[in-house]
Length: 550
Image 1: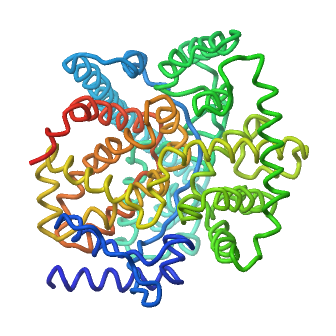
Image 2: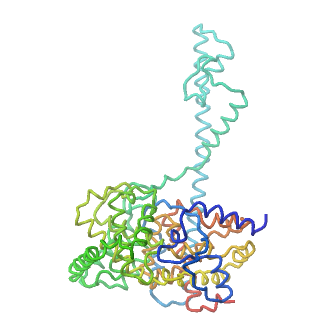
């Protein structure tokens, strides 16, 4: 089938999966937007024509999927060196050497893990063979005892009396109790059992929202000496009368401990002042200001002028992390509705756009952990005091607003910020991995078709929430992290899947892969490597944009 045929089938099938008009996909305040059309216009160097409100075009939609969520912070061994360079202008050779060291360390850890798995597998097979031999000897002894006592059995029955791995470990005394099936079936079952025993040990399943103290399990592990040392550094820095924000950024670049993440995010986002004495008064004033907005504007949500905006928010909120019970609680959804509606009212240039709802969730989870110690996945927020819930809501609103202030052109008319970033991503990838770029061109995959969501949702639909929170630690610490550094993270993220991309040989396969990348079990190590790659790309290209122009 031709590429054109594959593309038509792909968009037709996926458009049916997402109900509603283009307003459902891209937001109530925006006219219809066609990624294919805009990609071609950008290539030609033309400005996209304004949409005609009276004649909306049929929308091109993306296949929606949700990521499981959790939380983590970085515990890598080489990141202290990396973060020390983050806010400085360094020699490019030094930067490249440091980033390479992080990546090399990752490779060594992976190789060590493979060797450990192989050793464990060999030991398990030896143990299995020894146990089988011991069982056989015991069965022979039992048979000899029974014969000596006058218990005459036929050869068939005595054979069936041997312990079988297919009969829950019981001794089968007669053929009627033996498993029914041909010898071939038994051999197949035995082979399947052997394969199962030979599989390497699988890591524990990551809960949807793990404790923020641990990226991989739901328990609370003992803090390592390095983690305790890092936490002490944060506490000492935050305890001073005036927090040195540059030092805090350097320390935060490689991850922030759970215990100090809420206050650190508030400081790095500019929500709280560096002066410790002023913080409490600022918090009280900003929280009162937010709830003043609620009293002033929220009742207007059903007015004719605002009802489309509120309706779109009301539709999108239940789809925010639908697999997580926390976000399906009515009180949590009401909080999100108020945050998003007030933000839309106060930012009429963009209004509400689908995707902004995702950006509330990291702040909400981080600030909930300011008041609880248990797992958050099934936490009932109604058990919190009303004042705590109000604080979480107001803090989430202001920090999300600070984030969006730096990327608002992503959400204004025709979303020019996203279009520029997707074009820059295409140019960057064409220079750093020409094979991937040409492969996409060969099968007519436009970057806008998959990377639009990467920019619109800041990779939140591609990564588990635990990874997003770890990523945002660095974004908060990096100058222009959400608006500028994110481009290099996306480039590193795309090239990370080069092997899988090059194996796909048609448009449909590539699109399905790029919209469903297998990051479900990602944790700190993968995010650290991704950030190291992005850091290296930034220093190679950020100050020399002609490097990625042909």
